[in-house]
Structure formats: structure tokens, C-alpha cells
Length: 198
Image (cartoon, rainbow, N blue to C red; front, side, top):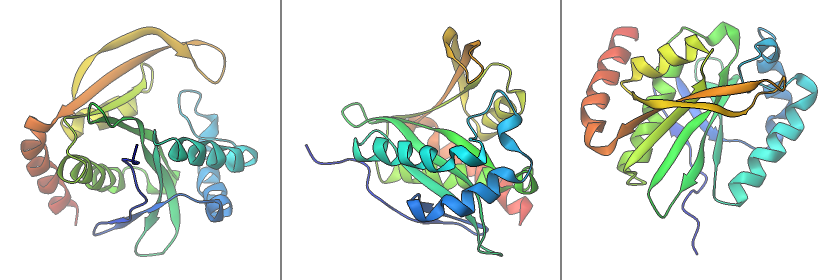
């Protein structure tokens, strides 16, 4: 069966999403160290020593057509400032999740996340013909939940006792989605938000 997810580069006004590769080990190590992101117990950010394995896992999932990982590059500086990916891809049912997203602390609350999600959603709905795109986050990650809701995603529900988090505690997972029938309205809203930022 042919792969559904292929390496692509998505470019906006302030960021470029490039396929993640082994060459990004040093850049992602610097990015995750900006704010010691691994100390946030409810996030997926690796420690600096875990970055290589983090990339290897992402590339393994890509080879299995379940994921398409990216690094986020700031156009004004050329610096890698974070990572995001399509994940849990289901080509038969034309669904996927956008997640495993984190940004260097200095790039948070700057409009980067809005543009990254816009680029990913646009490609998912307009090129991959997705019928739904999901977002999932830890129940206690209130910053992430607010950011997902600002995109225009609607909460589907909470998966209680869904999985173990990195500290071994049981995690409740909040599930959101955007449907293909909602994409045009969400797109208009995101473009309005981005035009206010630029």
C-alpha cells in the first residue's frame, strides 16, 4: 500500500516547517533548552540527552506511515525553534492528529503556534483531504487547551485514565477536533488572527 504521508516543507510568513531529520539533533537540543521545557511534567518535550532518541522514534513512526514530524524554523533568524507533527495517521479513514508540539520559551506567545497550526491544517484538509483533524492534550495542560480552543477546535471529550504520563501518573487526555465541514470558517478566523499579528 502506498504511503499517505510524504516529506513536505510548509512555509508561512514567519515560520517554515521542514521534515525532521538526524541533522536537527543539535538545533532541537538548543531549542528544548530554551526554558528547560522538559521540566513541564505535562508536556512531551525531551531532555537534551533524549533528543536523539526522540528524533529516532519520530522517524520510525514516519517510516510506518503513522507520523510526519517537522522542525519549526523561524524565517527571520533561520533558527530551529521547536517541533510539531502529524501523528496517529489513519489513511483509510482520512484522519490524523496534530501534536507532539513544543516551542522554545522565547518563541511562545508570539503567533508562531497559530501560523504552524494554520499551515498544518491547510495541508491536511486541502491536500490530504482529511475528514477530521484531532488535537489531544493533558487535562492539566491549561495553556495547551486554551491554545487549541483559540484555533477553533471543539472538545470531543475527555479520555479518563487514558495513559501513563512521563512521571508514571495516570493521565486524563482532552480530545478536540476540527471537521472538514468546519475548515473554511476556522481558516478565515486563523487568517484574521495572523493578519492582526503581522
